[in-house]
Amino acid sequence: MPAKKLLAAQNAWAIAIVLAGIILLIGEIINERFWMHDLEVYYRTAARMLQGEEIYRIEADGHYVYKYSPTAGLYFIPLTLLPFSAAKIFFWLLLLFLTVAVLQVLFQMAAHDDTTTRAKQKNTVLLLAFLAVGAHVHREWHLGQVNFVLLALYILLLVCWRREQHVAVGAILAASLFIKPFGLIFLPYLVLRKNFSALLATAITVVLLGLLPFVLYPSAEAFAGLYNGWFQELLIELGAKQDLLQSGNHTIFSVLARYTPLQFILTSEATIKVYQLSLLALIALYILYFVRAGAGLRQRTVYDVAVLVAFIPLFAVTSLNAFLFTLPCMVLLLYHFAGLPKVAKVLTVAGCVLVGINIRDLMGGELYRFLESISIYTFGTMALLAALTMLRLKQARQQNQTPHELQRNKILQEQVSEV
Image 1: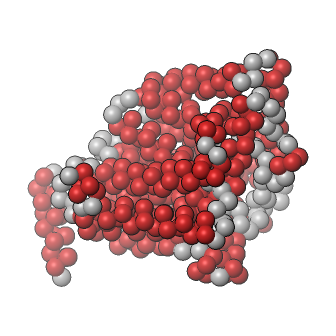
Image 2: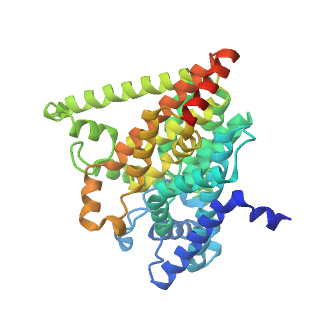
Image 3: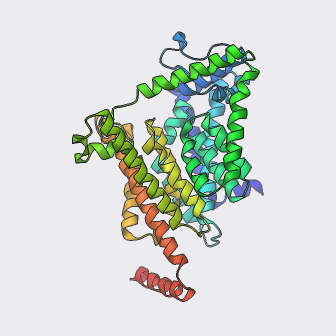
C-alpha cells in the first residue's frame, strides 16, 4: 500500500525530481565532476575540530578556506563518520530529499484546506516551481552548498509557527544563524508579531550553540582564538564585497542605483550610506504594509515568511544560488495563478522566467554572463514580490466582503472564464 501511494498520480512531480536528481548524480560521477567543493570545506573543518586544530586561514586550503562560524563546523561532524566519497553521495541525496520535502510542504500550505485540488494541478505547480529555480538548485547539489538547507529550516520554522510551537521556532532560527546570518531578517518580524517566546528561545539557543565549540576547544585561549578567527573572516568578507554600482551586484540597493539617475549622486560614502538607510526604511515600510494588509487572514504567516525569505538575495551579496529563496513565492503564486489579476499573472510568469532561465548550457557563455551582469534575477524576484502583494491585497478584499458579494463575484468570474 505505501508503495502504491508513492506511485500515485499526484506524486508524479516528486518521482520526476527524484529521477532527475539521481540521473544528474550519476552523470556527475561518470563525467568526474562530482566535486562538492563547499561540502569538502565543511567536512575538512569538522574533522579538524574533532582534533582541536585551527580551522581559519590555513594556507594549504588555497581558495577554499573556511569562513563560517565555529558552530556551523560542528553541524557537519556526523558526516565525518563516512569517507568523503560516501559523504558526498549522502549529502547530495539529503539535498534531493529536502527539495522534495520543501515543495510538498509549500504546496500543502498553499492549498491549505482546499479539498478540490487535483493531481494535475499539483504536478503542474510543483514541477513549474522546481524548473524555475532548477538551475540554482542543481548548482547547490553540484557544489554541496547549504542555501537549500537554510530554506528547509525556514520552512520548518514556519511549520512550527503554525503549530504554535514557538520555542521550536526560536531554536530553529538560532541554529540557522550559525550557518549564515540570513535569518536575522526574521527578528523584526517576530517583534512585530509580538512572538516574544520565539525571541527568547532564539537568544537562549544562540548562547548555548555559541558555547558548544568549547567542548572541543576547552581552554579559554583556544575558544577565544576560534571566535577571533571567525571575526577576522567576517571582516575580510565585508571588506571584499562588491562596489554598489558594479554590474553583477544583485542586491536591490545596487540595481536601483544602477538603473536610475541615483547613480549620479552616489559619489561619496556619506551619500551611499544615506541612500542605503533610506531604501532600507522604505522596504521596512513595504513589509509592514504587507504584513498588516494580511491581518486576520488564516494563511498570513505563510505569505509573510515567503516575502521575507525572497528578500534575502536582495539584501545580501552572496552566490546566485540564493535566488532559490524565491521558491515559496513561486509555489503560492502558481497555485493561485488562475485567480490572479492579469497584471499579477504577467508578473508571475516574468518572475519565474527571469529567475530561472539563465542557464549557461542553454544561453551560452557570453549571453549567460551578460544576463548575469544586468541582474535579471533581481528583476525576477521583484516581479514575484509585486505579484504576491497583489494576491495578498485581493485576499484581504475578499475577506472583507459579505457572503452575497463573494457569491456574486464567483459567478462573474465563472462567466468571464466561459467567455
